[in-house]
Image (cartoon, rainbow, N blue to C red; front, side, top):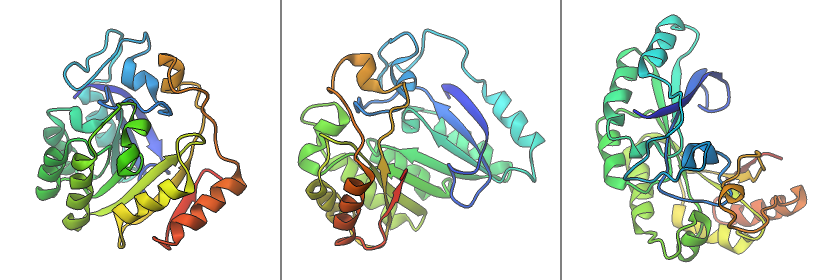
Length: 248
């Protein structure tokens, strides 16, 4: 596993759990509003992708540090959230999760859904207790939000279907950004998700490490006002009444 950072305690990243968060390196998408640019292109701006997602700069976190933390905090932590970057790029992610599970910890996996068959394998083996998948945009506009023009939505749809069929607790979520999303787009996303799943809208926040600032692409990104965001929430609830919003 190529691990860039470890957060030793979170009460937010894993619903209902006290957890540690593991941040993996590299991502195969280039969402301009990504708030973890250093995990995608590195601190020095080296591009990383699904073929080469190593980093020039150090340090990376050794797996042994993570397992030592888990041994030390048994009874205090009960879960591990794995995020990125895109964790599914890690070829040994199944082995890593299996070791976490063997130690008695629940696992939450964040994913963009680009690698559906690899995700399905983890779900089928019962290695994941909670999945959070980012749904970037409506199918016809997926390339806009992902930073990859013409990107095919079909693999992401397969991941959504695998997650819904798995019986694993899960959520879908969309970061809403002015100039990239509209209320009509969110309604289309809700129609793709369908009933029976938790869906969250997330307010865009400029973390100071936004990918558009690294690449010089994507224009000026901005958050919706709370009033605008609530209007988008109302639109989403016409399809998925239980939709919630984070960040207001």
